[in-house]
Image (cartoon, rainbow over all chains, first blue to last red; front, top):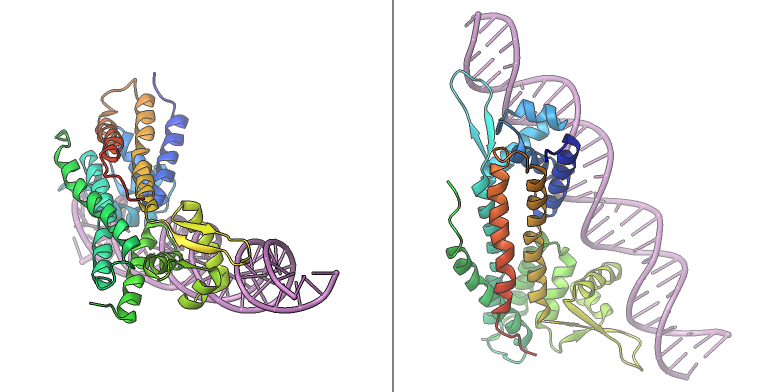
Amino acid sequence: MVASYGQLNEWMERLAAHLVPEGIPLIGGRILGYLLVCEPDERTAAELSEELEASTGSVSTNLKLLVNTGLVQRTTRRGRQAAQYRLDAAAWADLVRRRLDAIAETRELTAFGLRLLSGDPQRALRLRTVDEFYGWFSGQVPDLWQHRPAPPR
Amino acid sequence: MVASYGQLNEWMERLAAHLVPEGIPLIGGRILGYLLVCEPDERTAAELSEELEASTGSVSTNLKLLVNTGLVQRTTRRGRQAAQYRLDAAAWADLVRRRLDAIAETRELTAFGLRLLSGDPQRALRLRTVDEFYGWFSGQVPDLWQHRPAPPR
DNA sequence: CTATGATTTCAGTGCAGGTCGAAATCGATC
DNA sequence: GATCGATTTCGACCTGCACTGAAATCATAG
């Protein structure tokens, strides 16, 4: 079954909305959705601006963001003044990994707080519970990634 | 070694700043930090407003948020018109769990998109890669939690 | 070197969210 | 039921962010 444009557009919009709380602006999410399913798999900034009905400025800003996070690759070819942007599907794992690392980082804070309270074990009880949880979690993240099936090249 | 007030205040501020990108407003983070280490472990909204130098309105709003997410428990006692707020250290794990679930939910979107492209396997290649990653990840989350050491009561 | 088309920069606009503080509401005591 | 303190509600303000569109910049082609 071949999807209608309307269905795909609606899907892209849902994806973009889902990514907003993850820190990716709406237009950035639209770009990702589009690059995820467009054929062929490369587009110039101008094309994206046209097809997503977004200003060239926004597309430029968001492409820079996406390239920085590694989700999109920018390639230039001699003889073409326009750069081509292509989605790097394997980079989504890194995105998630960074998110987990950010959560695990809380451990540093709880551990530091515990040190400040080292003279008062009773008072440190609540913080100790939280610290133990983050200690466990931050230990799990690397293991989790180690057993991850290799992404396709 | 007993921490000075200044050190603890600084630590609370760092914690609050760390929680902002996680979706917890600054004052909410300050409340969490304070309730994490204060002695005794309960405070009224008025006390929090006083000690954190935040308006009563902000404290009210943020306490409601924290109670909703389960991080703080509100208890009332007959004979006391002021409600007491206490931190629930065990609830931090739920907070993280919800975060992981939100990430894992992306799978729903990738799977749905793949269905839309089911007539065009070539075009679905990138999306398939992403979907496979989220498929793996969303499967890992429940396992991870299952092996979690029991939190103290 | 000039022209053309693409990209980036940047000032301006709009919007959403956080905070404040005053007023209204609530709960308990007398 | 009146009072007193605590809490919530609500409008106002402020800040930061996303987006736009025009101008400046850049890269290639002629």
